Image 1 (tube, chains in turn yellow, brown):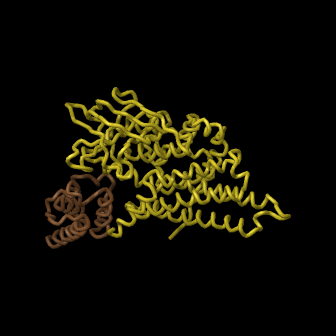
Image 2 (cartoon, chains in turn yellow, green):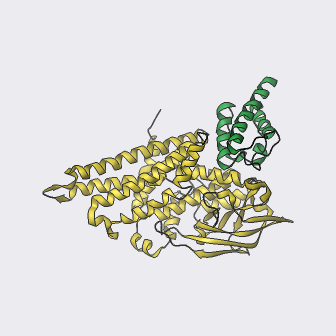
Image 3 (tube, one colour):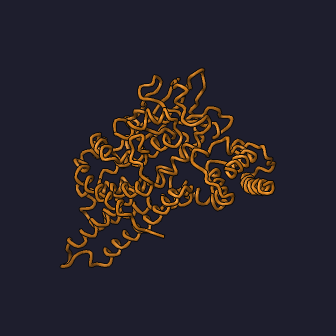
Length: 381
Length: 86
């Protein structure tokens, strides 16, 4: 059992932190308030190599293993306060790039991956519908084969990056009689007739990450835009969720580290009753608990990532890590606010935003309740 | 070899029978569509994959978790024995 990063990984981590601190923290309070996506930040991350980390070198990616990717995303979460930007990048990587890497044809990979990696294009994944959230495979969007095309009809909601999409992986059922086995995935290019962004959605947190509803009305896509085989939608979705559940919370680890350091520093500097507030057990305990949560979250997430790197399917470990790290991040954000007192509640201290951003972690990629269903299901329940 | 195939199939049958019992499906044959009958759902497929990796000593890639390999007990057995023979 070896818990250490390699020298190369440590050096890369330092480089990510240097890059992000220097380049990625401009005007965040305003952008959060205005719900503005930062295209320049997206491009900077792509140029640095973030979006391409898990993509093979032949398509312009970094060809990094999952542990190195987790290491980089944790460093990014630590040093970039724009959690919305990082969420958009994660959605793009795990639910657009990875399905293409795993299931795409040589032509599809060649057409899409280099542009998704270099920041020119933004990829989107459209699964959730108004009536199918946690029960994702009960989706109603239909696909019908007509000659050399598939025709899509239906609507999608809670679609991250929807307004920015250059390509969308849309899940639709080709054969509802087969249930989930009829679900297939189709690549819809920007500007395809019959596809529209129907409504922008406003959120509690992650406000710099755009979200919208999508509508497909007699939207025709060529047969070569089928991703994987007919009926492979369930496998594609589940595989991408497995990656996402392991990796998307890596940036949460960085956030928790930042919250811990900020709070410990404040508790040392801030004096009341003639001494640093950190000398009071009620405050010191909060700092200790923030550290305990961070360490436990790290171990759970690293283990899930390590198992994936060994070619396993860490469904249980990913679910446990997802529940624990997402809930830990909320608790630590609340503790950070409490340690900072009235200042913590003020927007300018940027802790209330951390809390708003953290709440979504227990919802996206399967709610905490769904993760617990997965864990219980593995025990035969 | 025959014994190993039978053993693999029996293990798969046992796993599927237990999953079917939990879903209230009693009439499980080797050709029953496991997804359409509701025996294997989105979570169940990964339980099955973990089971096969653990008990049959095969490594299953993401792109192999598709209907044609997991539709029926026969399909699963064919998929596993093909992998074992490679």
